[in-house]
Amino acid sequence: MFKKILIANRGEIAVRIIRACREMGISTVAVYSEADATALHTMLADEAVCIGPSNSKDSYLNIENIISATVLKGAEAIHPGFGFMAESSRFASICNECNIKFIGPESEVIDLMGDKAKAKDFMRNSGVRVIPGFEGDIKNEEEALAIAKDIGFPIMIKASNGGGGKGIRIVKSEEELKGAYNLAKAEAEACFGDSSLYIEKFIENPHHIEVQILADEKGNVIHLGERECSIQRKNQKVLEESPSPFISEDLRKELGIMAVRAAKAAKYTNAGTIEFLVDGKGIPYFMEMNTRIQVEHPVTEMVTGVDIVKEQINIAYGRELSFKQEDIKIKGHAIECRINAEDPNNDYRPCPGKIQELLIPGGPGIRIDSAIYQDYTIPPFYDSMLAKLIVYGRNREEAIMKMKRALSEFVIGGIKNNIELQFEILCREDFIKGIYDTSFLNRK
Image (cartoon, rainbow, N blue to C red; front, side, top):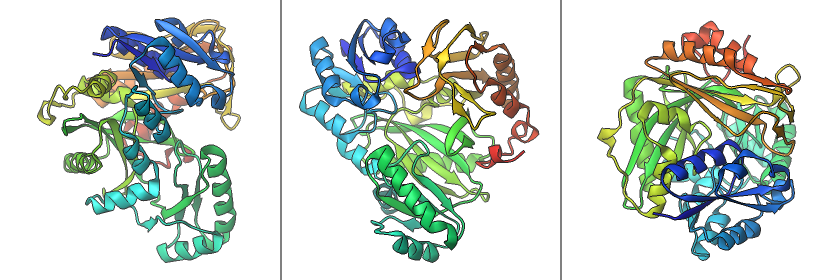
């Protein structure tokens, strides 16, 4: 097994990976920016290296500094977590050139799945149903309008190399298109350094369902069931649960088959997620593939008993999956709430600052993935997520009650957060009944 792994990330996912490594007897190296000198991941790791100033592009996105830290500390592999370098094919390729194992898929697969237009074309040719749309190079707003008319409104304009809800505009009429096209193009360039866009049919009020897959380097591929991720704000997930209260057993099987087929066709290795939009009739459409571990992976771990991070490391070392598809049994129900430093009453404005009071909930079936601690100062430079609160129950009803209890105990003083909003979501009748879709937070 690897003797030492460098974690090219920060926050709760860096802490999560460090803990998994420690349980496997693997030494860890944390990297940090100047703003993160007192961050929890730097204290938990066996070694820590400063890789640059506070700005991400000078630190967590600085490939040269990350590789230098890896070589300096003698680490054999890099785990990128999610965000930052996790879906950078260039970074994965450079790791390979430097004889450092990238804990993720091959750079060619990241390239293929990272271009949303190419990914859809690949999936269509692999027999996976995709959303109708145009995946070519759209030259200007006039061409975009012609394409939109051909597909039929409403449509969605999306960044070809986007993610995290950025570079997306929903267009319901011809009059809206020009402005939406130019805004999406500018945002895509600003966020991803690539202004290319594609257009697809907008499926109104769908369910956002994703399937977790694991694939080793021997050709074995399995899925770990689905996650319901329909509670979103501006295309960013707020709460996730597994299994989905919406889909039927037949659809669950169909989604699993499609996800495995897609991963095998792409010759995928390591952990990945196939994301689908499911319309009101229960028809699923491939949306995209995330070539990394997901923020919401804990709900899958809770209902399957599989430690996805440890599996990632084992796969990267060349080991076969330790189980077959028939060994995977979905048991009970899990819910995850993302706790963010933001003000829901002020357009969700980020609220960095010092944590003056902290009370973490506990008890059977309660899990906290977080990097915060008493008197820690949340820096203003990065994502606003403070913690992931995950609960497990024997069934969905028990999981909801347990989450409400845990949220009522969770105190983060000194900074505004969305704990109260999460509690309100769990109290809504349509959520309790499992009758919701991606329009949930837009309805009162």
